[in-house]
Image (tube, one colour):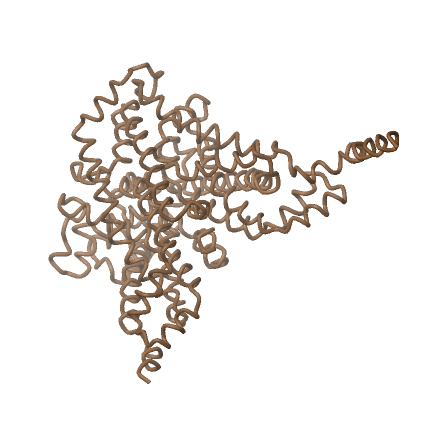
Length: 314
Length: 277
């Protein structure tokens, strides 16, 4: 008996050992090494800079020599700089107003584009076009379109259209917000279009039986059903406010005066125009913190399990 | 009765709104196209939105004579190289994330998740430092490497969401047939995830092709210039020749417009990748 048992046991042990070459990969799946190239590239060129921005914020560096330790002096200087305060207020303004204009507009357009009528499908194809243009192209095009002498004012011969749209400190910010909307509403309306198409038709059928009119259907079904789309799209809009850099850079360069100098632009101009890389890194750290906090906070709203899909596209 | 007519009546207000937005979208594009066909002297005298009385391709010729093909070629190299590497390494990583059930594999996934929320703009100064230290400043590598790095997280995410839906039995049966990892990747993972690869590839290509920040900060001379930056520099060079600047804008959009006409569905799904689920 004991011998039999032991052979039995040995047999059990031996079997997987003998077939180990075949069996183990099946259980464990692919080797972790396959992820190494992605990890290395991402680590060196994205995570190292992420930590580097914090390190550089404690140094003096003009962009050419080597960085020298400066302690907290950059932080004290940048945080006390009125220009930083102005840039901060402006960034908050741009974020809030671009959400207020883009979110309702994208939602309505998304609902419109989700309609099955033929003309809506044709219009949707054309609504996509701004997404093909780079920020540089959009900036340049609008700059000439808004030219006070040879732009839209001259086209219609209407006096008030011949303003110095981008040179007037009272108008520039609003014009910038309009151009941002032109660029980004098409993307967000696509999100809403996809969201609306996911809503089960049975909900609308039930509403019709209850004699709900179109407006009621919109507020009682469409809007609540789009909850996750609204959160996703809003997250992207808010975090996106930190990326409007290139568009504003080409459009106004931060002017007139410092009228459109939002934080990302403030950082670029500090670093690559004033050669104050340390100071610019302070702003960079701030942007990283804001970006991560906002997307985590907004994701909390939508529930942890939704996190993965919510974060896509950021 | 009322309800029924209510459903069938076309929504006039929505239609008007839709066409109003169409006007907003199309007007600048119409302006770009017309102006690029206008002789530069007429630009100052003709109505900016009128059909050019003497249409000409001079502006295009001028752009093409000013190194545009070089910039175009650079953009093609940077985009193709970046997208190829992104897809290759992200697919391998996604395969690990989905099929390797160990703890480190989950950690890797969380690591990439973190990367998605990093605003690229905020890290540009250390990226610049790194590229200078590596001696890559003002080369195409300076654009390719960071573009790859910042596209990996989202690409891994979309690809692994897609691979998760591939039935596990397929992997197991191939393992029993004695397939190694390379064979598994090549003859199962790659073909099965082709739709996701197309989607991710298009999304990444669009981002890299239109990227402006990396070229602005990491390159300087004409030999490493890509299209978005060339638009910016034409604007400085041709200050009195708006038709030429806008002609460059038109040419810069042509490849993407072609892609849009050929593969509209893929491009749209590429842009909203992962959201439509």
